Structures are given as C-alpha cells and as structure tokens.
Length: 118
Image (tube, rainbow, N blue to C red; front, top):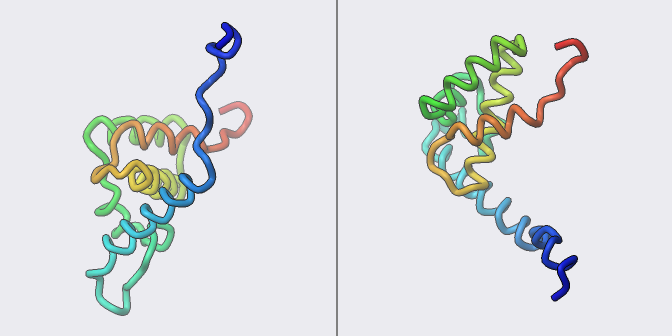
C-alpha cells in the first residue's frame, strides 16, 4: 500500500448493508408499536403522535438537556421539537440502541436547516 492509499477514508457502507440496517430498524419499530390498540396501531416512528413519541423517544438526561437548549436557541416549534425526537428515535433504531441518547439528538439536530440570521 502506498502512503496515499493509507490516508484514504475507509470504504463507505454498501447499499446491501444499509438496506439490511433499515429493514432491521423498521422491524424494531413495528415491534415497539404492536401492543397498541388496533385503532391506534402504527408501524413506524413517522406515524407516532406527540404523546406516543414522547414515550418512545424519551432521550437520556444529556440528550434531553441538548434538545431543550437547542429548542430554545433555534426557537423550535412543537412540530420542530417532535421532528427532532422522531429522527433521533429512528437514528437510535438504526444503531440498534434501546434508548435515545445525546448522540442521536445531536445528529438529528444536525440535519435541520437553520434559517439565515439564526
């Protein structure tokens, strides 16, 4: 190997590996919500209402602190706040993590577009 080869980033995850991780995350979500009453039955985090999302995506103390600070600084609406929680829960599912942690909140926040001047 040349010095140039050694300095290259590791190869990215292949599409088959990503597809498998996504399928596993969707299965985790379906299992999480399978005990809901039939009239409330959902399959994914995207379908969870605010109350259910607060239960399923409750972050750890560090994550809650980051989310609270970000919500104040970014002036997140209730919809924006819940969107961050929804994305963070999904990121935790993709990681195979039982709980939403600070790292999931941070990544979810990184995907938000910030308006100029904010």
